[in-house]
Length: 194
Image 1 (cartoon, one colour):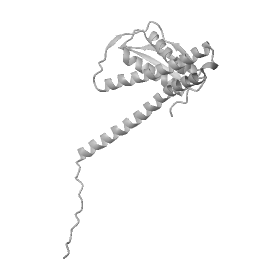
Image 2 (image 1 turned 180 degrees about the vertical axis):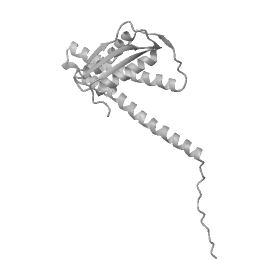
Image 3 (image 1 turned 90 degrees about the horizontal axis):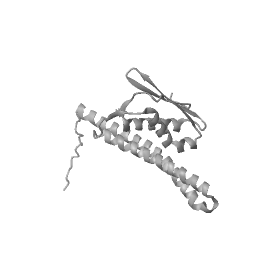
Image 4 (image 1 turned 45 degrees about the vertical axis):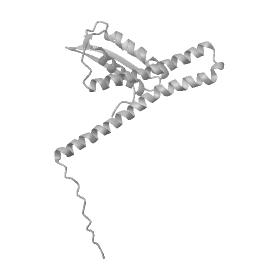
């Protein structure tokens, strides 16, 4: 006795143009997220690698260094760890803002002081690359902005300028009043973007 079995062709469900568009959008979001995570991992790797290297060097050769050298190594490791923390803080602020939990809270800000503090926070990276930073931000520019958002913007733009400026290069930070807004210019002598 023989049984004949008919093999049916599997039919894929037909997607509407709207469903296809949603799938494409989801695919694009997933690709963007993967790129973002890759960039973030790369940016976090540098300060952690530096901190680990400095502390390992100190741990393995602590008897070879005098107190001043030990203090210098610890200061560099601390500064590198602070850089990683700043990056993580920026990420957390960004995530909260993307979820709608962050409210715009404008206050009067001393821009010159804020930029000076952010430059000091990036001091390790600046020193490591022997970069010269000049700042020509007037003391009396009236500025109403969200402090956390502005700090994140200044820190990110300055950090990128440091990252892409060659060793011994220069970064100029300036600001000027333009009608009803303040224009902040962070200019470096790096390779730039085509």
